[in-house]
Image (tube, rainbow, N blue to C red; front, side, top):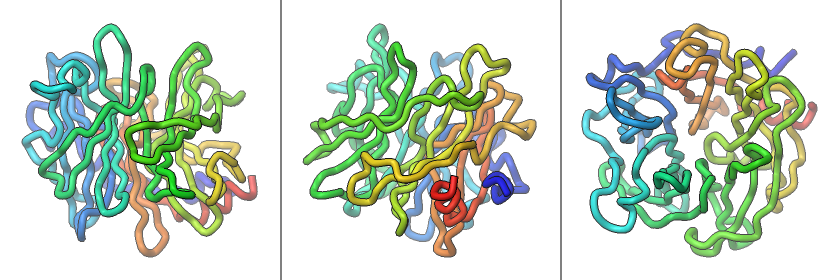
Length: 309
């Protein structure tokens, strides 16, 4: 059986649309976490007449992980005054990691004419957000933090983008601000679904077998139509620069009408997931850069498929 046989899309998909936030023309690419007994999504929102991929990040809250309500006021808006003002031209694609009791949030910001950089911030209540620093050079739009230190270092995943297209990298830090010891993990592949670029989705998940990393992959511009897919690799627990397993296929790709038709057709893009106590993974993703959807898959099936590929 293919790993795709174990993926179950929510029958309520899409679970969030523009109807849930009046004035929006897209609600998409969301981080995901638990905050107490609440499910929290940090939702990218764009509105008519605003440039780029999004202008604000809103909180969506749920009791069951399926039925969400979006808070009408933005949680993260473009900075107005201070050192981050020049960079917050656009806001979208946040990731959130619970690390040492703090919810750290990374997101890509744009400085017009220079490209995309990574911003690090934090919150303890999802009502107040504090920017901490610029943690990557352009062009790098998706830094994602591991949920714990490894051998005394904070660790993150990146997707720098250059002449060789996007690839997956690892880096280390003592303080979350200054990063180094960069190591290449994964490049685009030679299959239709992954031959253009790859990059991290949500935070790595610690399992007994290793760190499970879900990543997005993109088919090349010569493929008609191009699309975004999701796959995963398994990293060594003590040395995450070592890949110890990985899928040779995607576990979910654009299939349903809400994934194929929208602002950007044929896209499944994820910035977050939530692991339930029973081992089931709630996988949140944007369909066609327009709406938010949910699929569920047993974590052990993803891990065993990585080891047995």
